[in-house]
Every structure is written in structure tokens, then in C-alpha cells.
Length: 484
Image 1 (cartoon, rainbow, N blue to C red):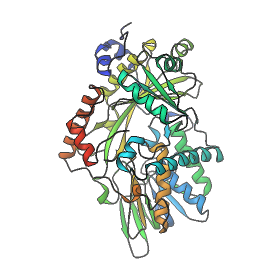
Image 2 (cartoon, one colour):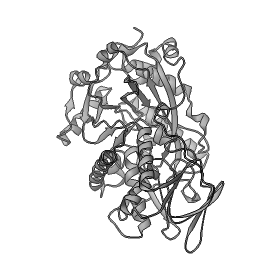
Image 3 (cartoon, rainbow, N blue to C red):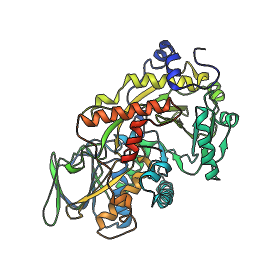
Image 4 (cartoon, one colour):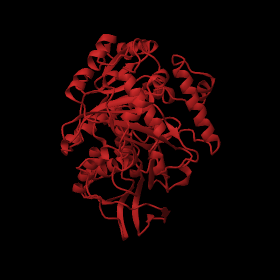
């Protein structure tokens, strides 16, 4: 056995003690395409727009935000003409590459919400749970086949100093049982787990690409016109309408919802408010029955650790009935210049790091191979949860900045955009979350330097029992810190 035995250790030490030969073998022959997007249920692409059309509502972007916007617009008014365009295909970007954790939080965790919006954090928690319930209701109403698992998430301590935080959270939430070392390992057998909380009510698991394709199918059935491989290239306005130019035509609309998230907004004033940060994940080959018995995990919960640079993991069942494990997170890679490029989806250094951490977390699975390793860009803003804007006298609405929590929060973001476009005052339009913008990121090279300093600060905090150093404290004070 080439892994570490005994007491839990840091992931730095785990990584240093896994032989290169073990990592090389686990990643031999790995496919670098997103696992989820290779499912045989993937629909054929829809035709691109050719020519000029008009509509009541144009949605730019075919990820979760755009799909939820189009769907809810048609539910509210079936007679409303809605057009949705995407530069690639539906769910191709972050919506089809994520871990499939659909969470209730709208503000990236209780602590982060309390830091940024203390006056309305409690109400946002309620709205988040209402939003999650709305997602599961929609899935059932329209028979969306997205492998919905209402099993919750097991949050685990991998170091002893994290256990007290778990106990305090469990005491504050009676429905969230605290699990000691022995108990948590009966759920998921890992020698590095010191304790855990099973949050049964704040998250569900989905197959992310199948959710996007299911929403696409529902939108089409409700009468939404969808054009794929149709990139919005410029936005212009008159006194009465908004026009979006594409490569082969124009769309004239009464209202426009911009749901491009990590990709550059058609409104340049938003471009300093987000940066693309790359996240990476591995998917194992199907486990044998012996491997399944060795690891447990019989209730199919999600899994996340409590480090600043945290890992997320979850099981999934493939189309042939094979039980696999996704393992991702830890690194968050920013490339100089705010650019989103296909070559950034492949990051061998991170794949090797994740493979080592997986073996250290589950030494009984040493020898397993990873069938897929992939990455994708996340739209990150400085407060780590979505922000909103309007332009052109309220006829254009914008939403972005979900920072990795978009599987659930995008539905809420879509509701906000529709309320903003209605021109009426609602509870959602009056939220501080909606009215207040995050601090913009500085231009290069300062943005790149800041991300590097933030990453180094988080690394040091994880090596020092979570204690935040001077730089992180300054970022907290100015409103650009993160504590989920």
C-alpha cells in the first residue's frame, strides 16, 4: 500500500506521498472531454439563425440561467414570444460540466451571506429553499429525466480543528445530524474523515447535462424558439426596441435577458465585474462490487470537505448501470487576461493533484482508473454570488457571477431578471442583493496579482488550521473576502 496510514494529514502531504507511478496508472488513457456531455441522450443540435426575426423576449445564452428565464417567461405568459440563442449548444459550457450539486444557498453559504448581506440573509435563506423546491417541482411536473437524487450532502472534517465548526452548525440546525469519526466512516469509509454533518435539506444531486437538455426540451414544448450556434455579437437600441446582431441575421426584441455568465457581456460595463476561474474534475471508471463494499457510500449523498480549497465528490450511475465517483475542486485556476479558451479545459497539473488526493482519501480504491478528466470556466465575482443590472431604460436585464453555485441559483436569477424586465416593483427587485453590485475586479496586471495573493492566502490558511492571514483579513474588510 503506497498511501498514508494512520492519523489524517493535509492534502499537501498526501500529494507528496503518492508515487508518480500510481498517478500515471490512474490517468492512463483518460478522456479529456466532459463526462456528462458524452451521454447518449445528448440531443442533436438545433439549426442556427439565418435572417431577421422579431420577438417579445430575447434570451442570450443557453445555459441554466437562459433556460430558466425562457421557461419561466412562457409559464407566466404562454402567449409571449420568446427566442433563445446560444453561441454553441445548450448546456455546452458550465451547465454541462459541473458536479451536479444543486444547492439551496443563493449567497454561497450562510457565512458569506452574513458577511455581505446581513440584513436580508435570513430572508435569502428562505427564498433559496423555496427556489430549490421550485426546481424539484419543475423536474417532476415536466418529467425531466436528470437523475434527481434528494440525498443531501455530507460535509466532512479532514482535520481535527474543523470538527468544532461542524458541531456548532449541527447544534444550530436540529435537522442536520452531527456524525463523529466512527459514524461518518460508516457512511463513507475514508481514513481522513474526522467527523461530518449530513445536510439532508439544502441540496439535491442531478446529472447536470441531462438537466440542461431536459429544460431545453420543455422550453421547446412551451413554444420557445431556440437557435444554437448563434452568437450574439452586438446590442443596439432604438426608442422602441432592442436589436441583437448575430453572424447571419438580427433579432429585434421588446426585452432582452443577457445570460452569458462567464462569457463577455454584450454590455461592456459588466466586464470588470467577473473573471473566469477554471475548475476541474475527474470521473472514475465503474467500481466493482468489492470496491463498492470497501467504500460504503450506500445512501448516495454528495460529499464536500471543509478546507478553503475544498474538494467536492459524488456518485453517479452511468447508462449501463455502473456506479462511478466524481472527484473535483481544490484548484481554482485563473489565467492572465480574463480569457476563456478551449485549451484551458485541460490542466494536467490539477488532474494529477486530484488523482493523488483521491487515492489519499480512498486508499482502498488504489488502482482504480479515471475514465474522464475535464475542466471549465466559472463566472466568479468578488462577492461570490450573483449580481444583477439593467440598461436601456429597463428593457435589458443582466445576471452573472454565480461562482460555482449556479445549478440551483440560476433559476432564482432568472426570476429576478424577469421581474426587472417587467418594470414593476416586486420583493425581488427591492432586495439589496439585486440593487447592490459587487466590487469590480481591477484591470490587468493587478487582477492577476490579486488572484495569486488570494490563492496563496488560502493555501496558508489551510496549512494553519484555517486561520486567515493579513491579506485575507484585508480582503474581508474591503468586501472581497470569501467565507462559505
